[in-house]
Image (cartoon, rainbow, N blue to C red; front, side, top):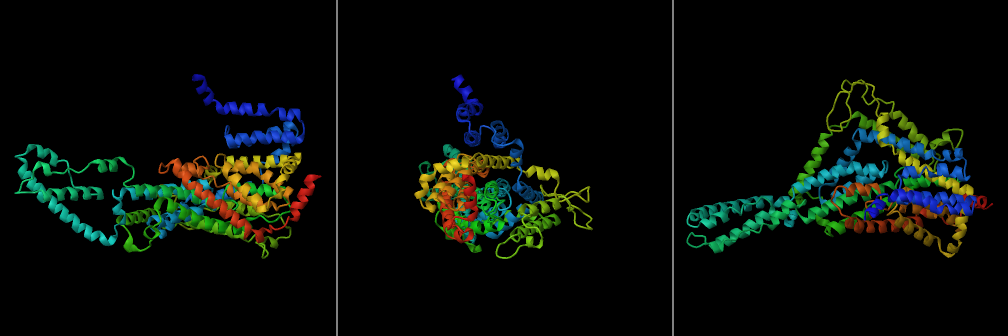
Amino acid sequence: MDLIKKLWRARKLILVVLIPLSLLPLPLIHPTSEACCAYVLIVTAVYWVSEAVPLGAAALVPAFLYPLFGVLKSSEVAAEYCKDTTLLLMGVICLAASIEKWNLHKRIALRMVMIAGAKPGMLVLGFMCCTVFLSMWLSNTSTTAMVMPIAEAVLQQLISTGVADTQGDSETVEATEDDCLSDREENLEQNQLERLYRRDSCMKQELCTLTELPTVETNGTGRKASKASLGQLSLKQTNGHLPSTAISIPEPKKEKESKDSRYPTKRDHMICKCLSLSITYAATIGGLITITGTSTNLIFAEQFNNRYPDAKVINFGTWFIFSFPIAIIMLLLTWVWLHFLFLGCNFRETCSLSKKRKTRREMLSERKIHDEYIKLGPISYPEVVTGVFFVLMTLLWFTREPGFVPGWTSLFEKKGYRTDATVSVLLGFLLFLIPARRPFSRAPRTPARDGSAERDPDPMAPMITWKDFQNLMPWEIVILVGGGYALAAGCKVSGLSVWIGRQLEPMSGLPPWMVTLLACLLVSAVTEFASNPATLTVFLPILSALSETLQINPLHTLIPATMCVSFGVMLPVGNPPNAIVFSYGHVQISDMVKAGFGVNLIGVLVVMLAIMTWGVPLFNLTEFPDWAIARNVTGSL
């Protein structure tokens, strides 16, 4: 047993050593470029899927194995680790650092929740909308980490003001006056009976100890129990005496469950589950909308542009036009699915905006959200600057090369020199220069992370510092993306991608939509157990070769696979947002699997609908494009 325990503890180290040694005969027996490249690809993929070593460290494997096996020169491999998308990501992170530093994300989230209200259904929808909006520009992990503390504060307010019986959830503000009158009558009746019982207690000592047990409860369960017991007492009353056989002591089980349980009612627990899961799913949906929304979009864009340099079809505008309807449809269907799964089908009760149907606890929750928003104070000068940069960056991305009209790049003489990264880096650089203090202001303020304002000793302190940028910059993702580029370059130079395409020729009889559906199902299944960037990096070269072999537009398979790789929503290990939500303890793995399966199915169906409808005219998917024909001919020579 000790030996087994030691081997289990060292399983990752054993895997790191055994995998390269067991696969070593492949390049030794067949010393070709294809075999050597396949060896590096398999070793790196196994490291990524098993996570035996950190993802960033595993991405460095091609940097030393490709030169050792003679696939690529060291200088050629090094050039793959820093691309245009790296600069794009750095500029976006500068803006994200400013948003987080000046609490603009919290103001946006609280304002949207205030608009939605505290009804469970509308509360979930409000949090989903603000999470989707933030996840468009920030990473999914950062968005979830920002929004979950706000949602947790709202949930704790719901729990603290909750009643212990389910009937309390349906009480409305209109019934509060009747409740107060009934409470007064119950208290009056209880006081009379207590005086009557105390007068008789001197003659029956054993009954005195029993009367100390039942007490008047303030919550719904206690009040209901007291009414039942008092009713029995009044019916058995004869000649001013309370015989011992007539006394009914309330069952303490419900009270004990109410104290020991974290949630007052099962419905409260369901609301916590629904709201928690909705945030991680909304973060995933929001990441689909923009190229910078998630790392997998960046990996696809860079690998596609490297493999097909003549294809000028993927940019911020075209991606947004294709993915925004997908996100809207997925958002609504996911909300309906979660509502049905955890809150039931009574949408009228949980989604009503009428103030007359609000319960006391919902009013208290709205007051709590309003108080949190008031703590932020009036909108500050740095928040205004950050918001202006946010809008400006978006407009410049959209108008660079919109396609239907000339963009602002047409103002320059040389074409093709400016990309989305140029805009993001320029605006990100300006954030290091612009002072956070309002011009001619006497009282500069520092970021109100804890709600307090302090004097800034430096009146020219910039909007963000390098430390703020470093705290958010995901260097591991940058290296991981670079490792994917290196693997793709090795597959292209060695001819491995062409060999893989030839092995997939038996699938040529399938229609394009069937090939795309199989690719989506395969990718979405693998990504439940492996990291999203690693899964996509492995599958992109294979799907590209498959599309070229079958004479299908590569975008027909690559775009759906890129989107479906983000649907690792069934397990906590599927992606970091799932792990963050799971750590709060409201959901169990069975809840995540049950809800995630429906979300995964919704995502695959919506993506297939998009690629078969509005994706066809947008990307001209009905024919094999010239840029893919040129790439296919060059690769076969």
